[in-house]
Image (tube, rainbow, N blue to C red; front, side, top):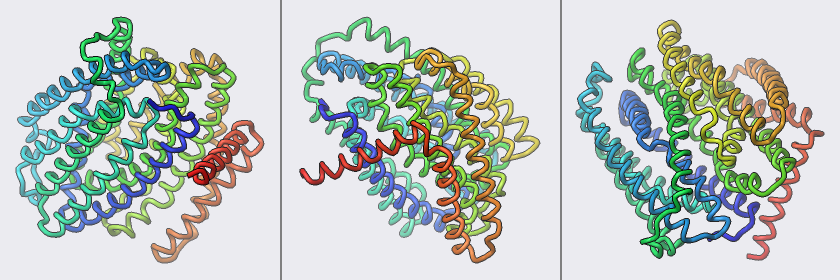
Length: 517
């Protein structure tokens, strides 16, 4: 098991995450460019639509993944091999059952595909049901292998799963690029994805078996009843949270297809793909420090916990605020340069995408602390309210305002529900600090980023050159103005000083490791 320090583990995981995501982003971007060149835009819509449908089917997972990962923290810290082996054996049984259930339920969706896509575009020559089966196989098969990544992640070895996924993702995309150029065949394209995803899953399964040989040692021991009961209790809570999250995040594509069709959905997926790449990059930081935060919350004082939270929350705001401004200022110019002005959407769409991006991002610190505290039951019903409100608002605003209204509905449903309640829980129960402290800080964050965004937008509007020159100038404005304002405003705060200290310590730690190596 992992015996390295929290700082070293976090640095290694974040570093591997950034390298892996950079390589994946480059290859994925090239692959999407080739996709757009050789296949009709409606195929992008099919990709987005089927991905959303199968994300909803993943509700079958019941949220047990989060509950199981949480149950692994304590035995890992205590190096309790027996308990780890019994938990993982139960995890395996549950996930194999889930994989089978996802596949069976997915098959039941096939008769309704003609209602979901009422008129198949003439540009799509393949049978819709046949294409859907590839997506279904891809989704269901992951449950038979990837449950093992939970142990690596809980043991602060995310870098192993990150690099494994990156290697097979790159191989997959290279194969898909060649297939598109040579055959222009969407079926072969999907087959390549199926094959390389399967190979990646088998590889990570093998790595886990080699890294933790004791998993096969305790085959007859039964899991402790108290631990099993706790897992079940947490899984029930996370099931409701997962339903709400999926209904909020994955129904938009289905509603957009209903109101506007596959073509507009295809245009939107270019925007969401770029934002998805950005989100995945940023997530490397927060995903890879969650296990370290779990240790802080388990053994450190509440003062230390709040110090860490304040530091993470400031970093959270800084990163997502800066990137949100970049989305508004640069997105349409980048789409124009990349695939042409015909693929652009109104600026208001970029604004709403940036707002949703910022709102979700600002929850990162809160969610990380909430899950590592083990507060799964708190707020579980409120997430369902978020889902219901999102559906109601999406149909109402989608009818009146189209795509802009559907995206606005997502932001509104979050704002009136878990966006305020989750911070309340973390501060009230976990940090034991009045929640008004968080609210005041958030409002100041909001004012700072709005001022920075307005100044940047106003100056960017003065750019009237070629597209590539505009992007270069606007990128410099985005880099200088928001970051300068944030540094000037927060440079004397304790959390800012802590961020700087942590950065310096990480830098020297890396140099030390390089010199020793």
